[in-house]
Image (cartoon, rainbow, N blue to C red; front, top):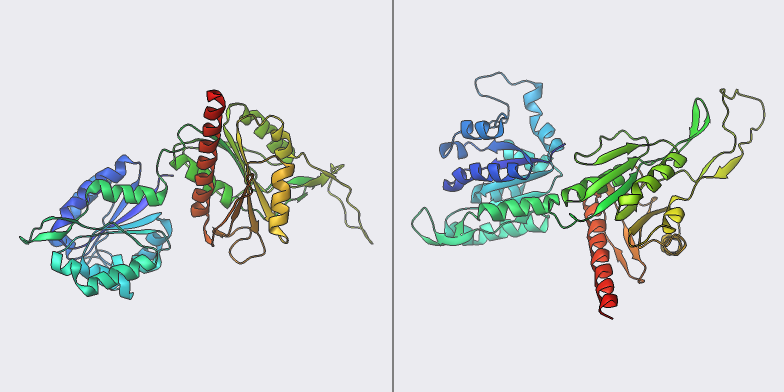
Length: 412
């Protein structure tokens, strides 16, 4: 599935440049949904954007004025809010910026801003005096404090005849900001990364099995983020309800034994492994071929350990980067450091699954990265796709350090 961006176009002379931005984003493989304010339509027609995107352009809160409002049109802003990966407003007028800063939701664009949890990028464009006015600057700082990324306007000759800051930033600058927030870059283009995700299941009998609460969301976010950054990605996943991200090579498994075999097979041509799967540590010694019947009293299930995938990978590690996960309920740092050493991993991503917003099946995570050099990096709660980016940033740093060490050894 391609990335989805909502492009809000507000009423300013620079509105015509938004058509060029649509094309630029499409060149990055981004699907663009255009939303126009009423004022924007005074400068450029919705038909232009419809022709460029092949999609309906949203211009009204409750659908076309000539058509009766219905339930679908009444909640369309919620549907758009849930399916987009980012909202960009370009050009963003002083009026729209003010409404966003104060929480005014009187049209589709401003309502969408309040309804979405996706990242937001603003590219202001207006008269220099309006841009420099204390009210506008205060509103911009308010939005920045909330995490909105602002692409500052450029200085130059303005449509009003004045010269100064206020001209819409270049299309490349806006597109680069959008791609940066989406994690679209090519800094991992030389990597082939195996990512494991989800739970594994160990059958007890034909109708029962042992598993855990993993949803696979963290592993799938890592696979998606790595593809966006140019890597070749092989996603090995246990059973989940998630669709594989576009661009990955997908391998479906069920048991820990199957994941073990798949990882060993795929690691032959890989440069890195990110073991985000929550594999079952135990399996029944003798799975039953028929359904076990209820009986009075206690039943005993004889368990044995499943294959230790990380430990086996350590034996063939070579110059591969190995990143493991430690989902803990207590003594997180102690267990993470022990796992880092025992598995010979380069990095352990640890989290306390009892912490709010960091357990299984959440859309957010709270992670701490433990490296072999003794360093650790703790991050606050953030969306799992952002946590994935922080992990991949560390992978890139590890690769750079390895290359530097190799170059030093060769020089000797």
